[in-house]
Image (cartoon, rainbow, N blue to C red; front, top):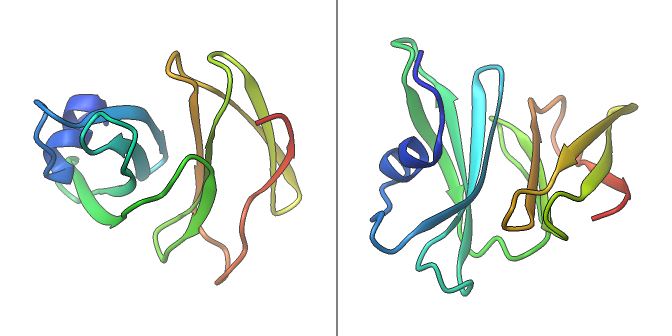
Length: 129
């Protein structure tokens, strides 16, 4: 199985590493996601989704352009909640009655993903962010 890291996220997302910057990348089982600053200028942040294919390689599953600095997403592959805060800050989220904590990267970005349970069930930020 290949690790979903920044290099893999850029390659599988079709981004030019000379220009794009991965702000945060996370995995959960056979799903993964990355927030990508497409031109490294903060003007266009994309949420890219990946799934672990049958050959053990991460494959693109979708992309949401202009995701912004804070938001949520639902797709047949995953639900996601993301935002920006202080580097190293802990953000507490609630999803389907369970509490989850994520930590902002050194760039200050955080990202939570989970498999979807039904259409439209989004992740709530309960504290922090």
